[in-house]
Amino acid sequence: MNKLVKNRIYLDNCCFNRPYDDQNNLNVHLEAEAKVFIQNEILNKTFELAWSFMMDYEIHSNPFQDRRMAFLSWKNIAVVDIDPVEEILIKGKDISLKNIKRKDALHIACAIKAECEYFLTTDGKILNKETSDIKLINPLDFIRQFYTGERI
Image (cartoon, rainbow, N blue to C red):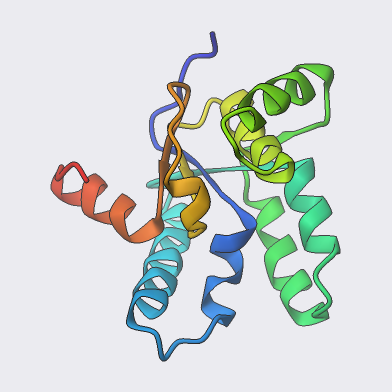
């Protein structure tokens, strides 16, 4: 099994899109602020960002060019970029058996391969699942847990 790298995180596509969602919803607004805070902490080297071919795929599918450019700029900041190797595809298939969509399962498999400690998402369907390989958590709960030690 892969060794976890302390403070290495994977932000899924939902996280990157959160600031563009309806900010009139308090939970959405707080998650967006948390995501921006986490990105600043990545720049400050508190956290390491992992990237993957799945991020490339989903970002290139985004119809908004300004968002694509903003999101892709983070690829250069990532400390690791996971390629689509057979191990990822097999792990993704196993994860999808937990009633997780195939694309989401591949993201999680990439995060595991990147030896991330946390998989950050705002997708409630993913957050309701569990895996023994990585902690699935939303950005707001991640900040609370990381900075206060409070377990959610």
